[in-house]
Image (cartoon, one colour):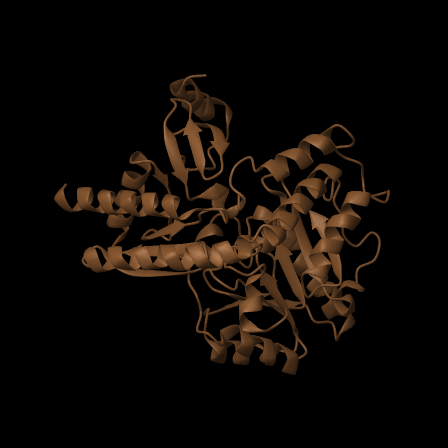
Amino acid sequence: MRKEEIISGTSEYLMNTYGRYPIAMVRGKGAWVWDSEGKKYLDFVTGIAVNNLGHCHPSVVRAISAQSRKLVQVCNLYHIENQVEFARVLVENSFADKVFFCNSGAEANEGAIKLARKWGGANGGRYKIVHARDSFHGRTLGALSATNKKYQKGFKPLVPGFKSIPYGRIEPLERALRDEKVCAVMLEPIQGENGVIIPYADYLRDVRRLCKRKNTLLILDQLQVGLGRTGKLFAYEHYGIKPDIMTLAKALGGGIPCGAVLATNSVARHLSPGNHGTTLGGNPLAMSAGTAVLKTILEDGLLDNAAGMGEYFMSGLLSIKKEFGGLVRDVRGKGLILGVEFANAEAAKDAVVRCSNNGLLTILTEQKVMRILPPLTVKKNEIDHALEIIRRSLKEATVA
């Protein structure tokens, strides 16, 4: 199909739930994608932190291909070998003792909320969840109740029992935890959708200490910053802490829908058959893809690459900030989640569009931040190319 046919077909047949760029992607390889007209782009959106290994990574392609010839789906009424293998690798490389598999990040967060409430019911009838303002935990009603208010418009009443506090400040959390009905605190280690917001260095350590003192669970939503994105397999590792519950998705299945809730034995034991479930979650195809993704990240040096390339990219972005100080207000990030904050929303949107026109895909988030999410496999020459496009695009903007 031609691009015009794809775009008109989208309007005719699909619900209007996404603000789409006028591009139709048809092929990808590594850090690159091609549209229906043959134009090549450097993809630093990566499906919004989904394609951490880039597009069509050989290990994932082999795993999917081999598994699709054996068994794609079998329900959870039976034992599934691929689940055991994938769960073992996750447990052996994290704080967790047990795993529940689902299909998406919102599902994972719903599962975490239910698990926390089940634990809370057995610990004094506690049910309230404290979460940070401007978070993004998903669009299902439970996850939406802990998500930025702008996404909640038109969907109230939401699920009761959620309380928001400012992100990155410990005093409001201390006050919130005076409520004896609070069972859990739910946080993102880095707020990605909110513009790559990173709290002060000891924030998560302070939160962890406070949760322990109050016998309250700590849930870390690592949908976007898990699986190597920050230069560690899981972002909590930077801070020397361990959560009670962690949620994963996005990159977990290498592009195949896959999510997971990880927890300690002391928390996980509160779920029993019938409390929670999913028909498609943990299917053999997704499990095979996920195992391939995780083993590749661990065995191919991609954590070190993410850390090193992140520092290299940051250095280049800081040079751009210095060069375009009137246009670029701030540059921040950790590993390969990076944010460029512009002076205003108009400048940010213009920069993202110009970069796209020049062959670099990035994301506009919170109106005035360009979010950059390269694959963990990214090379120096690809970062150099991206920096050149950003610089060229900003020069175009200043003379327009």
